[in-house]
Image (cartoon, rainbow over all chains, first blue to last red; front, side):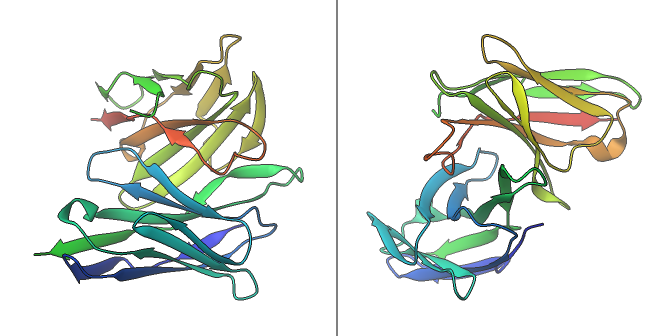
Length: 114
Length: 114
């Protein structure tokens, strides 16, 4: 099966940089994804890493180290609208050897202070 | 707007009852996924359909079933409802294959069992 660990809550200041870490255990690996979810809203896709290294998309970057089973999401120039929950997710292998649905971490609630 | 639609938005029903949740994927997406989100269990993968056939199964109870129709819309059937089934149910869709790590979530159906 799959399991992911991420901090339950992180607090940061508007305009600053924050890093949300994620460690995972999975049988088979199709990459690490990150999703954002505002209160009462649907998860929305942010980024994906299949290979080691850093992927940058605007103010958001995501990093993966497959040897360490570790990744992080980096948010720069924080804005109040970034206050949300952030989930890391993996898509492993099911018992039939095919790709499974996403397994999500419990989510990190990011609080932005002015 | 992700392009994924779900109905109804809210559903209130009694224990022991049966309900059907409906999802229409984004145009062109062949895969549909169902997820359950609750405070204690987090966001959990239930089941995936691809082009009308079941592709992967997650933590779906035997009281729950789903299907995907020829027009690619999907329905999730929940029966013999219990108080613990109260949750937010999301449908997501993706283009299977290389981009399947990126899933587009609908707005969700909030189910309350009383």
